[in-house]
Length: 137
Picture 1 (tube, rainbow, N blue to C red):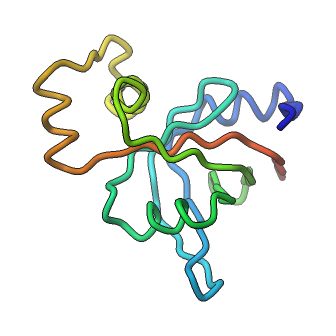
Picture 2 (cartoon, rainbow, N blue to C red):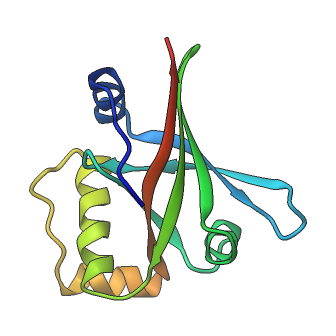
């Protein structure tokens, strides 16, 4: 999959937000939506989810997803492909990235206690690579 071109305005918008609505597809074809926090690194999104949730099961079955990042009437919609990550060390690294953004602590580091918490909570990661971005201003 070739990377898409992301404008400076889109990059700024994604960098200055951290909450979105994630849409996945249920088995019957209807949408399932969830509010999520995300970490954007300029290429992909990392989202921490629990492995027993509908969004995890939906993404395993159908990896095409959409994200809506809105701010009042302004919005950015991302269509993308999700990679479901449930094995360390990649799971721990991506979860650390999410926690750094959501806790506003760029120095947050995972340790044994953090990994145990991820295991206890059945935390996994979506890595979403954008295939299309639409923005209205």
